[in-house]
Structures are given as C-alpha cells and as structure tokens.
Length: 186
Image 1 (cartoon, rainbow, N blue to C red):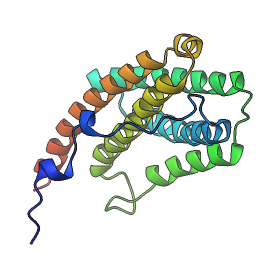
Image 2: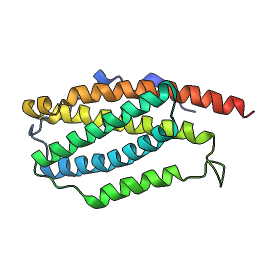
Image 3: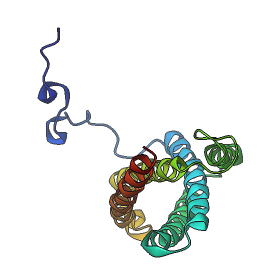
C-alpha cells in the first residue's frame, strides 16, 4: 500500500528544479521538428474548428467558434512566418497526417454507424481544448526561447494568453454540452 500523498507526487511549478545551465540558443534541428509537429497539429485543430463552426449556426457558441477559427488561422499564419523567418521548410507529410487525423476524428462513429452522435459535440470540444492546450504550450515555449525581436514580431506571449482564454471558453461550452447530452440520454 502506497503512502504517497498528492503533494508528494505533484510538485508545484516553483519547486521543479531549473534545467542545468546550457547554451541559451535553441537547437535548430530540434526547433524545426518542434515547429513542424505543431504546424501539423494546427492543421488538425483548424480542420476540427472549421467543421464544428459549420455545424453550429446560431448562438454564442457559433460566434465563438467563428472567432476561434479566425484566431487559429492567424496563429497558423504566424507559425508559418516564423518558420520561414528561420529558413525552415514545412514538412508536407506531417501536415497531411494532421489533416488526416482530423478526418478520422470527424468520421469516428461515437456509438452510431450512421448519422452524427449527440456525443460528437462533446468530443469535438474536448479535442479543441486539447489542441488549445498544445497551442498555449507552443507559444509559451517559443516566448521563452525566442529572441526579443521574435517575441515582439510574432506576439508570442499574447498568443499564449489568447489560447488560455480559448481553453476557458471551450471548457464552458464542453461542460454545458456534456450535461445536455449525458443527462438527456438517461
């Protein structure tokens, strides 16, 4: 029987040891891979957001999803511009895999072979939350390793904050959708 408590297992961020002193410039090779992976993820997230936005035509969630799509397009454009500024080329295979991943998520049955499951809305919102968390982490990481000019040019900290706001809004819509779906289907 384990006697570990939550406080033993989960460290507060301030108690996590700082990394050993290293060269302050990021590895170009690893940065290229990191940015490529996030660009592929942005293709997946943008595709999911567009399809969710197309299904929601009225109300506050519809307006929010339209704004989310515009913000995701803007973030993807900024990510591509940063990669171009760094002389990194896009990995088209990874981008295609991101798009294919979005299609797989869209057409997953969710308990029904034909038609859209009521659960699909909840799962779409959860996927958008996960994508927004990855996007916030991307921009937080970039803000910590970028040059001051890059931080300013690409508004990295502001993009991270906006992603965190998206997470809060998406989670509110997810909670409401989950309650409506799961309680109505009793």
